[in-house]
Length: 215
Image (cartoon, rainbow, N blue to C red; front, side, top):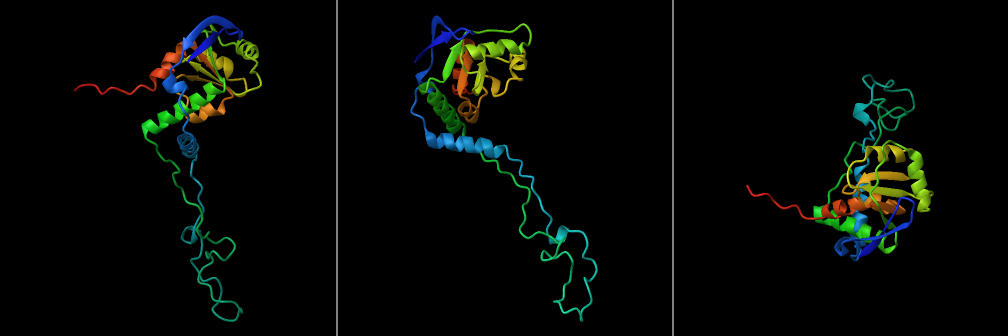
């Protein structure tokens, strides 16, 4: 598929770029998208919740009260879960929520997410540009030119651009990433994707199978 290339002012430059149909025009697999987004969110969980059980609560070395004469059942320890300050029964323990997906499934999920965005006209290709110094105003003007200053924007670059990153980091809901790094979650979370022309090849090459080097 072909998309027009825009200037940083949000106007068509008159040039076009070719996007791979195998990445931007496939039939989205919603099941794989769901699994990959769920994996991404699960892997962010710390799983550090912990409560003390009966054997971990301090105290209980002596008998709670005398054997007879209190009118209560005999208790052997003040660490009983039935008493205030006692241990917790079946409380949470540290655990890992991480789970894995194979590489082909993750790539299919990313392709499906990009195809969804392209089908909804939420992918824009812009001329390659660089800032000599961090300037938030320049990024804000660019967003206004595309009329997306009130939306979640993902800007994809061909390589690490510190000046662009610093220029955009103070603007809410704007993220800057190298084109080979966005996850399925980050692609779907953005309302629009602004991709530099040089980032197109970087993104498409990230889906190419890695050839095994001969020993």
